Length: 463
Ligand code: TYD
Ligand code: MG
View 1 (cartoon, rainbow, N blue to C red):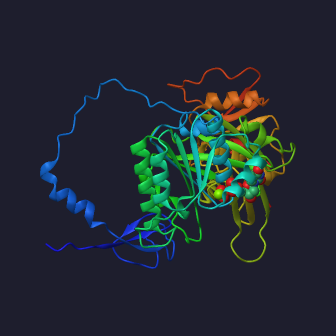
View 2: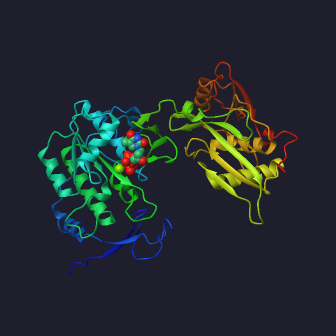
View 3: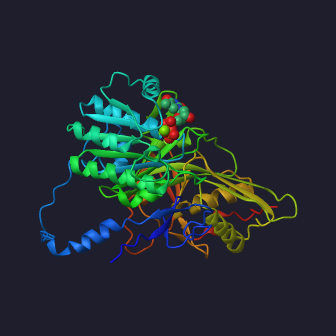
């Protein structure tokens, strides 16, 4: 039987596989991102022809003893938190993010901390020469470390080096898009190369038991295959986010076979590299100016950690004949549209003639529906010109009929607010039955709302 090499088309941006080429990817709607890839007939055919020779696999009971994987702490607590407690041997972590966001900086800092603890660590860069990495290390103040550096893009050479260095515990590859395998007939950064190189490196990690950290650039232009094409191959995926104009950087786990996926690590980019931010609320609120209409503090939750953020809203009369502007930074624009509609319909606030600008200060992106109440408070305050109480925090989800709904972990949010000196919390009304809320922290008064119209005073009306 003749072996047929079939072809498939993989999207560089999202990794979706298509049977036919098309100008636009169905899955992510990006244009010109489909790339042809030969399907390896080898694996499938050899497996089926040797099917008769398979060995019986060992079966285990579900109730057996669990051995937690040993972990190596990186010495950077915010990174360890997102990893789920540290690096697991033979695991593969993909760190994605926009170019220039600080991936190399973070990993060089982590690698040198690990090396400083006596682990054998290899930092392999395909982007920078060894001298450039050394210069960066001088700037970061980590020169004394016993970290091993290499500049290479050749995966075969890298794997050969790793074979010859059996005591290596951690390997950083910066970045996977620069890596190259001679046997694959396409340029670095293409889906075929990125996948094949990652596959080789992952195999080496599993075989030799070192932890592998792959850096992957997220590219909007679609010139390189993005980290999405590797997400299913690795054990953990974390994205390094932030606004380049801001100091803050957030490391967020998108997938983690060895830990929770909703944890975040918060860093600040300084002239001496990334500094850990162990108390993000204080930092996010540091520049808040009291007594200004259109601002409200949201008591949010990022993973297991409560974080206080300032939500800012600005309304201005609509310019021109077109539809009014709705500009959102750090929140979902669909959710803003919903909330504006609820405020108009249920509370009589006239907002359709206004341009609305909404901003979550500090560059963090909020995804929790619990932010609804804080956003509503900021909008109502902007519309009325009356500042929200400087000592108040807000949290609660808002439904379409204007009802304020429960959100998880009210106690943790209240505790964080009290810790930062807030004295009042505006939150959903307790449901009579089955409510487990304990007493509020000392000095904190609660204002429980059942309906969003309770936020709106009688004289609030936007002109
Ligand atoms: P980098 O780690 O090279 O980003 P990536 O690897 O994600 O592309 O970070 C680059 C940016 O970080 C660059 O714009 C300069 C800035 N930076 C600092 O502000 N302070 C520092 O100590 C370092 C090393 C970089
Ligand atoms: Mg880099």
